[in-house]
Image (cartoon, rainbow, N blue to C red; front, side, top):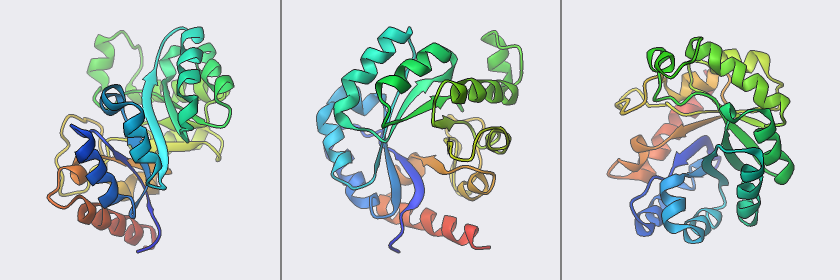
Length: 232
């Protein structure tokens, strides 16, 4: 298999040695590597170097959320890493999203809508008036209007988001699990094949690959399932 599947591997590794092993094993099979808060805060440039050397797209998942000036400064601080994707929380509002977009025009500023660990009841507890689906749509439209070029939403909302945003907006879905995997701490989940069929461009997968005895083999198997699903 020579084509990398539209998978963003979540690199929530406990140390650089493990991260390097995962990246080496899976990079032939996945399009994107997602470096999140744990690895970036702990290892900084060393973790970025491992990702950049893989040849995969670099997804820097920092979920920036602050006043516009502070988010612009944070985006400026990571510009040297040249990520293809950088996440901000859509709930930070238009001005905050626009500040990141204007600071990093060559990066796909990626707006996170509603975390997949939250369900409707939890959102009500937090003061949201609508359902998770309604909140995701509203936040997606705000983010795109502010210049975001990618949206993170659960597979349960991806079809609805695809219907209302321009076709060049990249939709990224966490909460994706192969049929054989546990849902872990994600509540709004689906299979990779279904998420892609519903309009996702990239699916985020972590523990079903990194928790396997053979991460490379697990990534290859999921990539094959995705390819088989797209050809039926």
